[in-house]
Length: 278
Ligand code: AMP
Ligand code: FE
Ligand code: FE
Ligand code: ZN
Image 1 (cartoon, rainbow, N blue to C red):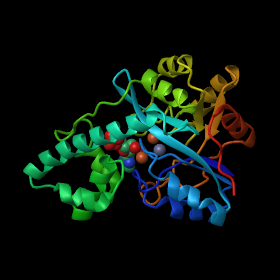
Image 2: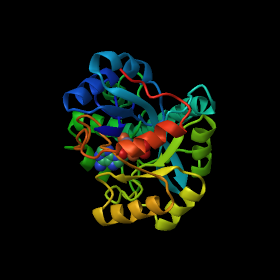
Image 3: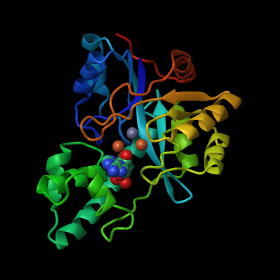
Image 4: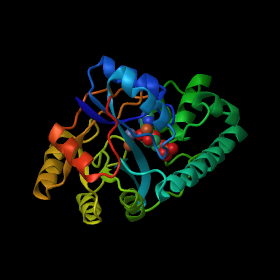
């Protein structure tokens, strides 16, 4: 079983990379992709867990980008973090923290939440995002769940919402490719969270040189998965499937969608960095 999209507590997952690798082993996963939002901070711990868990590790990332004012999540695999992408992540993490602070500052003025409460739930060096504010609001009893927080105080229509500057899609794709990595558009038709991209945008992304699409993902409606699969086949690109596991932060379960060995080989062959095997 190959699951190439998961999160640890270095972004908005709820387990350390070591715990994530151990759980992957326990549910029968052979190859795990660690793809925290805009950070590679989990790599060392995940690498250390390879021998004892027997799980092969694909070092990855889920990069925040924008196309036509909408947020795009771009998965990058097996790139060299010593290239420009590494510095980019450091800058973007600072930008994300600043933006989140401005959101919480406005909430604090209304007596809803303090920055200290957000840091308490986010931990030491997570890529900060709205899910952490959602958890802090839940811990205080302001909302009952992450979903409720996203539907109300954290929605893009909320008075507390603030945007952050993310690179445009072309720049994000180049950062991955210039570092020798493979770029896959994550959950391109994720409707549930207002994230479905037009077919035109998806084609534009592929014309930029994106290497493939995350077809099999719970947030892509089944009828759209068929269309996405056809596009990938026609263009001889890479089709992936994955869980987008966030520990207890989301309902997604490890291994609920997977990538075929054939497609995994394509990624490993194209990329400059090695898969780490036990
Ligand atoms: P941000 O990057 O800070 O704007 O927050 C967006 C992140 O929140 C993305 O990683 C989404 O996967 C996540 N997200 C969006 N909606 C929800 C939700 N209802 N519950 C949990 N996480 C969500
Ligand atoms: Fe996330
Ligand atoms: Fe995502
Ligand atoms: Zn994700």
